[in-house]
Length: 198
Image (tube, rainbow, N blue to C red; front, side):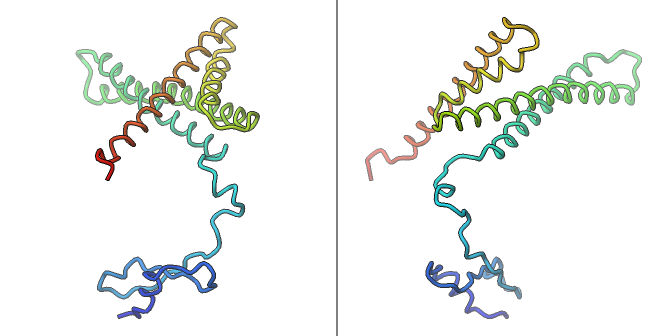
């Protein structure tokens, strides 16, 4: 068996003033030989401002919204493509031809909607991060303005009227989503608190 002194080091905590390495043992409760891993002692963030930040950076935001948009669009588009592929069956089709119709239709719709929603996510993340940097505040109005701008930019090539309508729809959709998220947080927080104030 391995040395159990490292378990005492882990369980006793880490003294911030000491320069001894922190050891971690993922197998301490198992009856197998193990080795200790050394955890870093340096802070995760270089500056205190970064540690206090409660929000993703603009790069993380960009990756998150673009990826989620593409994934949601690809799944939704593939689902609608599946339905249209099944509807396009003909009576004399073999099983191989039916599967081919489904795959072609799902792939085409999934690609189309995935790209559309990915671009919308990219525009939204860029505008939201830019508005936050200019205003130097993080509030609901950044999100609503980014939604409005995203809709307007996405439909700008179709004319001013189409861009204005799409901008209004984008602003309303984001406003409703942010308000719903805040209400859900309040509801969950309210339910998790004890009723009697214990």
